Each structure stands twice: as structure tokens, then as C-alpha cells.
Amino acid sequence: MSWALIPLTEEQRAVQLAAREFAAAEIAPYSATWDREARFDRSVVGKLAALGFLGMLVPEAWDGLGLDSCTYLVALEEIAAVDASVAVLMSVHNSLPTQMILRYGSEEQKERFLRPMARGAALGAFALSEPEAGSDASTLRTQAVRDGDAWVLNGTKAWVTNGDSADVILAMARTDTPSDRKGPRGIGAFIVTPDLPGLTIGKKEDKMGLRASPTVQLHFDNLRLPAANLLGEPGRGFIYAMQSLDHGRLGIAAQAIGIARAALECATAYAAERRQFGHPIKEFQAIQFKLADMATRVTASRALLYAAAAAKDRGEPITQFSSMSKLMASETAMWTTTQAIQILGGYGYVTDYPAERLFRDAKVTEIYEGTSEIQRIVIARELYAGS
Image 1: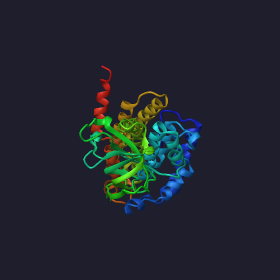
Image 2 (image 1 turned 45 degrees about the horizontal axis):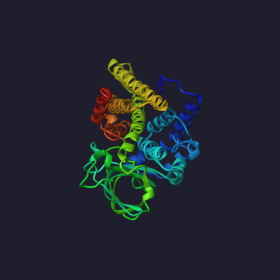
Image 3 (image 1 turned 45 degrees about the vertical axis):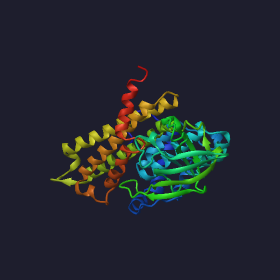
Image 4 (image 1 turned 120 degrees about the horizontal axis):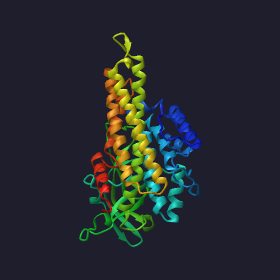
């Protein structure tokens, strides 16, 4: 079941089918085990790369597929419907570090970093948040000091997806001085590689959901990196990050829709098989109303996401649209997985069925890449933009 209100092109249907078949064959048999063991299987990266799924939005000139946003999101939903942990790997890599280097990187940086990332030979990560800088990320404290032909970084980054396995990390650090803080305009974006002395992998978080996706702290202790690893201008890194998050939130919305769709499909199948009082429970109005509301919310979330993706591909501003998409899709995922567990009853509460894993995976979509509260602030502010 897809309930896509916007008709897909032949190419998009082919990509959707490829993603669906890949997820069924290479992810579904292992996803419950990966979740239970909180294990990241690095081989998945190579398999995604073989399909071109780690360079979907990168132009062919840089070894990517050069696809549009909607096609990418169609594929991402298929992966998320089977395993949200794999989907977040794919989402972060495609939407944050690769897009930042593509948009703001020098030709040398694109050749050295973007090309292997598009091929999937190098995995990307994004390091913005810190232990004391989450929703208010512009208050981050990691400091970068220019020293001749190098920058020296000191500080700690938190909640870094792929952080312990990434080959290219886009890290935000202050380029202003403690005596002359410039707020969001005093932050630079730096390309960090794991071979650099001074980089230490810190605590790996033991998470409620997305357990097969590694989330770690990164410590920079006099980490010295070449001046050429600064992305763009010294004080514009935070601006670059916020612009990239507009696109990243579309990926999280697709991930949330995949989770919600999987919950709906699980509940629909169960309601057709489960019998109570002599009838399949799908015949009871209470169950029908839940399924109807679940299907409606999933379909509406997808329609909003596709509209936002189309606006992005037309080159239109999508700050408000992307926040709307993430807000609606993430709250749909949380609500839909809750209803799925209710329909399954006791069976929804145990690991024999995927509903409880979907429920755990759904929650973080309301938190990362901007909480639901932050999305509402963004949407409200955009209502008055230019007034």
C-alpha cells in the first residue's frame, strides 16, 4: 500500500521497486537482531552504495545519480518502512554532509571528499549539537583557532549519527573569539577525518530506538586540521548547516512516514487475522476508525512531503515547508505506532511483532534535526517573514 496522491514517474517507480526489493532481501531478515543487539552492520553501507543510494542527490559529474528530491525520498521511505536505523544512515549521509560540500565546497574539497561520498566509498556524518547546545545550537562552545596554515579544534560534539564509523565529518566550531562573540555568524564548518590526531570517539548512547544506528560523542583535543578543510567562509558554517537542515528535515519526514506506514500495514494485517467474539477484529467499528485515521494521516503526511520536495526542486525556499513536513510526519509516526500497539493489544507490547520496535523508533523523529516545538517556532516565524 502506498496511497501516493502524486503519480510517480517511471524512473521513480523503478527506484521505489529497487529500494523495496533491497530492503526485503538485505535488511528485513536482520533488522530485529540488529535492534536487539544494538549492532551496526557496516556491510549495509556497501550494499546501499552499490545501488547508488548514498549519492542520490549528487550530480553525475561528481559520481552521484543526480536524482530529484522526490525520487530520493521515495527510496528513503521504502528503507525506513523496514528498518529506520538504516534509513537514518542514508538520510544523514545524503542530506547533510554531502549537500554542504556540494553547495559550499571548493573544487578540491569536492574531488577529495564529495566524490567518494557519492560513490559510498566514504560515509558522512554531521556534528552540530553539543551537550549544552541542542535546540539552541548557535550557543555551541567547540572552538576553532587559526594557527598558521591550520585550524586547531577543541570541544565536544554530541548525538553524532554515524560518528564512530564515518570517514568524513562536518563539524561546526566557533571561529570568533571568547571576547568577541558573533553568535550564529561566528561559527565555521570544518571537514574532519578520523585519521587526524586529537579526535576521540566518546560515549556511544544506549538508545530506546534506532538501536542499530550508532550515536556517539566526539571529542576534539587540540585537533589540528589543514586550513583547506574549512568549508566556505569562516563565520558562515552555522548558516550553511541551517540551510542544509531544511533538506535534512525532508529526509526525517520520509523516515517517519516509512515507520508510520509499516505500523499501519502491521495493524491492518493483524486486524484481518485476529478473531474475537467470533469475528475478525477488522469488522469492528472501533478498529476500522483507528485504521481509517492511520491511513489518512500517513497519506496526508506523504502528500505534504512530496509537495515540499517539488518546491525544493523548483528552487523555491522551503524552510517553512520542510518544518511542516517534519512536524506532521513525525507526529503521525508517533500517533500511528501508538494506535498499532493498541490494535495488537498484548501482542503489540512484545517483540514477536514489529509494532513495539516501530513505536520506539518513531519517538526520535519528534526530537532530532529540530524538535516538534522548534518546528512550530520556525513555522510561526515564517508566517511573519517580510512583514
